[in-house]
Image (cartoon, rainbow, N blue to C red; front, side, top):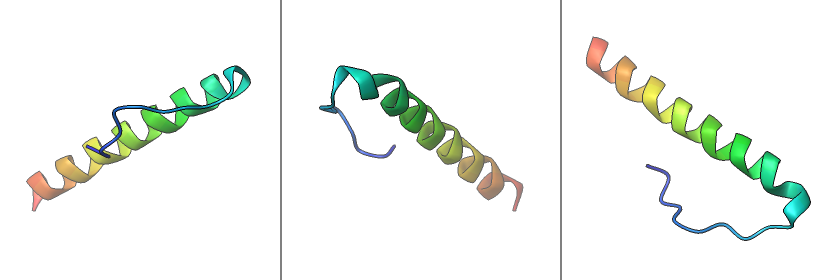
Amino acid sequence: EIGLDYVSCSPYRIPVAKLAAAHANLKGKVKVKEMGEK
């Protein structure tokens, strides 16, 4: 978990904010998977 519960941005930046949140979520899942393989 990256610790975000609220994000404030311009309406034009919402798609970018969603992509950044999704990227962080996927990156976290990869780290958990890698730790489980060791």
